[in-house]
Amino acid sequence: MSDKTLVCKDCGKEFIFTEGEQAFYREKGFENEPKRCPECRKVKKQQRRQDNFRR
Image (cartoon, rainbow, N blue to C red):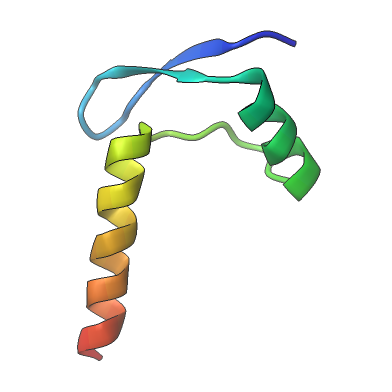
């Protein structure tokens, strides 16, 4: 296994999906690769938290 270069579906920026991250995903049973870069994942997570807080 080696690092993979992926493209973020939100911002279009390339990011590296490292061997370590791939092993973590596999260990957790995740079957899909991340679709967002770390920065966009962080923003999306914050948006979900705010949406849940408003309810």
